[in-house]
Image 1 (cartoon, rainbow, N blue to C red):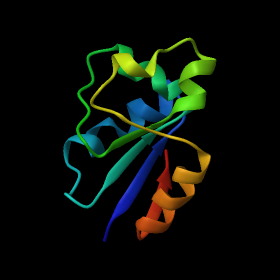
Image 2: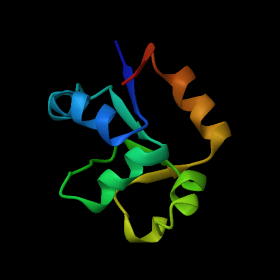
Image 3: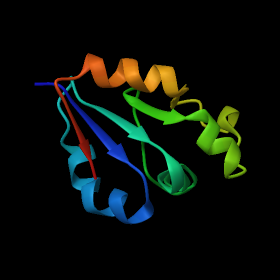
Image 4: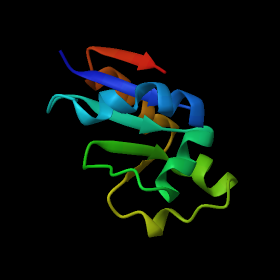
Length: 90
């Protein structure tokens, strides 16, 4: 069962960080809103990490500095949800 883990804030990321380290190969992460600040820290994100580009730009973050992240728009977010069996908003 492929899960999409959606993080919207620092607090939500802290609640779900253990999940990131134990995700299956089918699971993915989406960072949005203030959870994008986690990219600046020490957190390691793999190829299944997606982030909303418009949210990054709104927070003064340059997506080009985070090459390991797959930057998406809102239409891509819909596709990401459809591609997974379930979505968990932390």
